[in-house]
Length: 313
Ligand code: ADP
Ligand code: MG
Image (cartoon, rainbow, N blue to C red):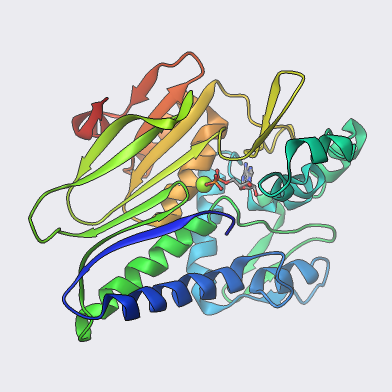
């Protein structure tokens, strides 16, 4: 997934065996949703673009896709997983692995404006039809689940952890971190709460503050510091405004969402980043999620529930 994954587990059973299974759970999800993998469900869907028969949607993706398309609609298209042709043009997925110099030297950094405008014609979640177990993509379209994949993986990790209850390797409590996506699970044996740090987007090796949480929670952050390239003092980051095809410029530097499931949290963090603070507060409320935003002026804007559990450092 192009990120660092870490776990802390509390179990009286065989922790190493649990870790191995958790690794397999992540691997399985990635094999299903990574567009680069030829045999993945997403690749098959992308290859079917333009086919009037559509493509069969695997059962476990059906519910998730309905959720994603609902959030796309409720965010006015700020979240749009059909943004793939634009994301490819920007070469966003190479940013994490290449040196900045290489990207610039390759002369492939800033897309040509007319090309970008052309790619935008092949995007738009509303042009995709989902019918029970079938999805229909128009010709030239493609899906990129980068904005929701880690959240979906966290949901599957939670399901796996719950299943361990029936086994000898029952996990009592856990905290899992997939890049900006954190899952806290259960209660720690000593009864102390979970503490989740929020990265300071102005100084990414420092925390802005800490959330104090009990039980199972999903905390998802999207920020302009995760993947970016700076050219002539302008920061080009990996969250694209689907209306313009350029990195979102809504006055925010990061958005953190506290939600009851991982997919919703991940989808909302991206959508809210694109929308800007005013619309973001409304969207989060609609989903009964708590939100914390850091503006480019360094201001912290929070929903009421978030303010109750946030402590500045
Ligand atoms: P991160 O991957 O750092 O957690 P996000 O969850 O915000 O960040 O997802 C960003 C990724 O999603 C990008 O790398 C790109 O592949 C894709 N993407 C960018 N902009 C959008 C958008 N507006 N809607 C849907 N997907 C997007
Ligand atoms: Mg996201």
